[in-house]
Length: 76
Image 1 (spheres, helix red, strand yellow):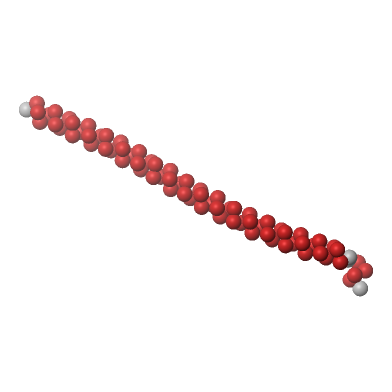
Image 2: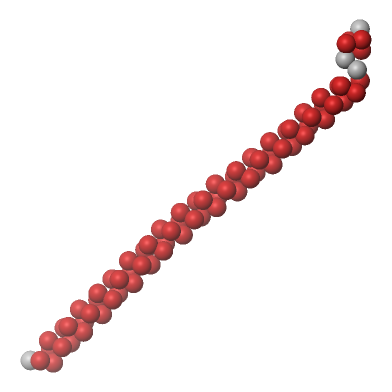
C-alpha cells in the first residue's frame, strides 16, 4: 500500500540524503573541535608572548639598575 504513494527510488534517496547529512554533521563537528583547539592554543601563545615581553623588560630594568649601582659604587 505504501508503494502506491512512495516509490522505492524515493526511499533510497531519503536514506542516502540522511546518511550524507549525518556524515556532513560529523565532519563539521570535527572541524569545530579543531578550530576551538587552535583558538585555545593561540590564546595560550598570546599569553606566553606577553609574559616573555614582560620578562624581557624586567631583565632590561634589572640590568640598568645594576649598571647604576655599579657606577654609584665606583664613584665613591
